[in-house]
Length: 250
Image 1 (tube, rainbow, N blue to C red):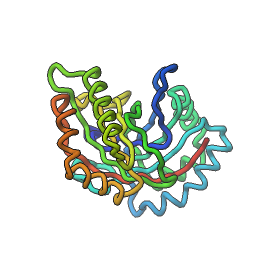
Image 2 (tube, helix red, strand yellow):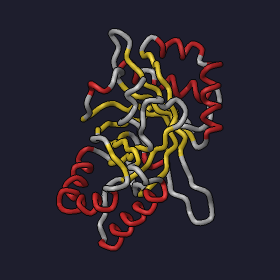
Image 3 (cartoon, rainbow, N blue to C red):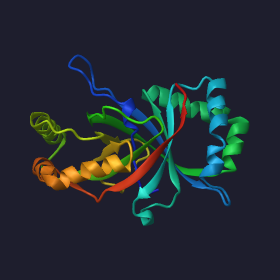
Image 4 (cartoon, one colour):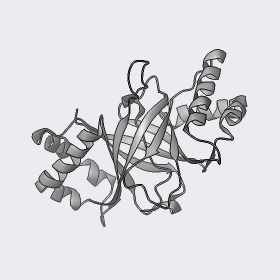
């Protein structure tokens, strides 16, 4: 897979920023690009959700949260799959345990899954909170994803400084943004020909909340955002995806 730019997703309520006395907190994501087998669709997959939860419990799977991510407003020509299956773990050790468990013990349930979906590509990401969402829905979310590459002479310290300026501006002006801003760092499985250094992920409860934030950006806030971040990176056009919960195996 080479079109892995705009769909790196975060269900935001499960990530938090670090305090001053600990290392950065992060989430380890295991992502799969999946397609429905002939004659199958999302309803067929949903019919297996209960079985998946039972399989995870019976096999003492490590704590995780699983979601499907599907295109909502996006250039479908960029994707040769139907949706992304995402497993979120609290550590890479647990992610590794989850992969090993599925490889060794998927059994009859794995056979059921293989008759509904085929997942050809896998990759990992590490996610950090920039401005975490205060409240998030339990079952679904709207996600705007923008992939970026650093401009010449720019890097992580510049981006971190810009984050602080942005957050300070919002706080000083008493501006509240619905949703949260997160940042993703490419990991194992990321395609060699993809030059993105990170992905900005804006998460809102739904498309209406997303719309209210876009109205604020067009109302003047966007100019300030561009002034703070504009020279740091070159970014692609955004895509909007929807995330829906599959199972909470924690």
